[in-house]
Length: 285
Image (cartoon, rainbow, N blue to C red; front, side, top):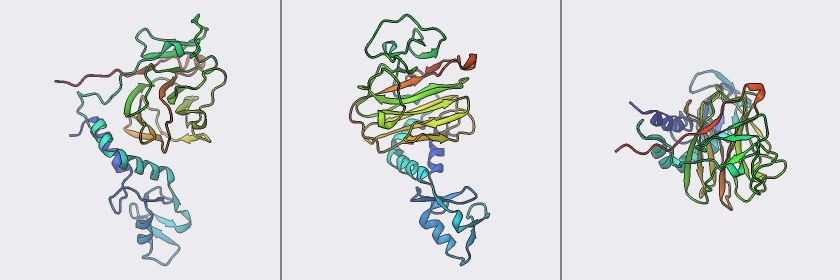
């Protein structure tokens, strides 16, 4: 029986595999029924009829040729999984008693906005309702309710997980280390931020340009973040649901980046739960 990580790794491969050729999607095309196939696979399937409609190879529902549309996001995901398949399998297919986390992160209190309360062990952060009396620091956010991790990354692959259960708002991702943390912050790759975030309890967004609404179904309790500096990608996963959320690809990380965290505002008492970085658990001997 597969461990949870093995199930997650298998689900990624199934999500990016064409049901016809059983290989990674190549120019994936989605039908009106929601099923997706490689462009050449569905063209070959539909070529058996001269009519303007054909049945789906999966569910047999009738689809019209005009209802076929390119699924660019799935194509990017397929390319990402294909590139990182050995790393994903190694990272996500570990036994239950071996933790998937590869980086033991803590928060840097000197970067935290004065409204934010960082725990003593520096693994949790939540937003208070009063400004804390904190030392002035050039690296502290003074408007955006954000805090950075103590570590920065300039090479290699890195993976960490964050507990987000019970929250109606949060921000997770990475940002360039050299960015000014003063004034208004725009969460955009053009501004050096690669993030996803939750607003108003059920509105998930990717901080792309422009922002992209994400359909997650149920809210994750734990989010995994996978960063590959050399290959220029950062991916987010619903650890509890074992699903891919979103990926930024073809990113040029021209300088070190640091994980960024935003616990969101109190939301009238509905968002008081902290964001908590999951600790690294050593391998069992």
